[in-house]
Image (cartoon, rainbow over all chains, first blue to last red; front, side, top):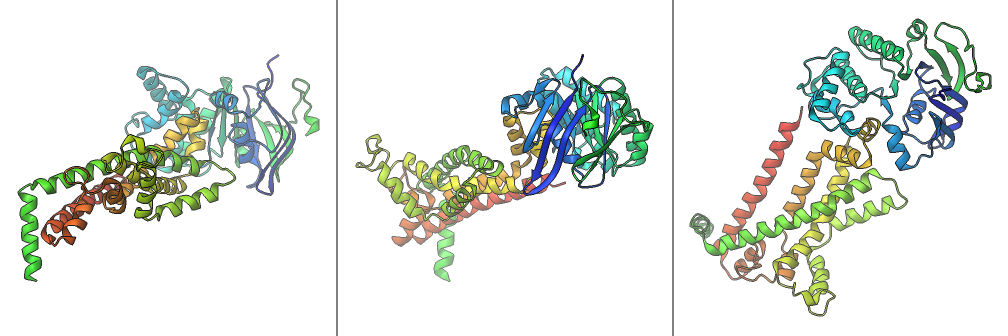
Length: 240
Length: 231
């Protein structure tokens, strides 16, 4: 049986003296959509940073696709090539849209110009920004910039896509495109973990909603409102 | 007033007639300063990046030391390097004293803290999302650092130009380690000091004008490049 994408146990993360996250046990299934819900400061972004291997928790263990994460540089470099996080306030590098989107494929070892160009074009087409290749990335509207950042993440073809509030502060058209893409990618087997204030979106999906409050997992339900009906690989949700 | 006007006329005539002494001093100044700032960039930029990006126990102390070294008197630095390269010093056997190479060593040491500090400031002012963004796109530490450097390249350029401005206008290191030897180690600044003390005000003024033109040109170039980059 395929191991879960992530299994977190006894995770604690703090910013200076403030405890931001305390998760006794949490499993993220492979190839599914998970939605992190909760108010500001509930620990959603902290959890996403841990899942992206950008932040080492002060305590606890993370198992990724059956591999224990040791947080050593060599392993982190390899794990980060399988995961991509789209930050809430995403940063676009100076230069063209094309250079931005090409960054991930190049960093992940794509060498031929033709392959990179194809990856860039495909990703931009997915977010509805064909023809934007030569545009200056710093001169885009908020919605366009968010879509370029999403295209940049998609160009990496990650096994796990982590999205921090992708639907906030974007225009209706961009929100629609992002929503459709998330559902489509999830249907194709990409593991997606996204934080969102949009509970309606969660209800429309088959995704699992993990609700956080004060850094703790408060509840976990299926997108259709039902409680998880099965234990995966022996990890009991009752422990949450 | 007549003295000043006459001196300016003579200075301009020395410049436009391509006086060999003037040209030699300009060549030495620009050559030594260019090599010095190149070497200072090789050391100073990584130091600034390393201190700016990493967290380590004595970081504050290192920053204070780097700041303090920016105010290092050039004659004291010249004296220290003199001790190293003079006949009795540990590098005495290499015959470096009173050569352009000795001047390059001294001026490099002078410029490293400047380049490092300006680079550090550029890093401190950089967007904190640059490195995490690069990392999450699959870049390793080195590539992330390169991307960070690319994003703050104008700050780093300012660091290098500030270093150049410092070394091309200094006298102490050039005088003590170069010895002000005509057509060999005589720079614009040491020549100005020497010729003025000899009463050759016009010659000093000619070099002073060239020194100002070089400094201003570099600053104008920097400003132009920075403005053309701004969105």
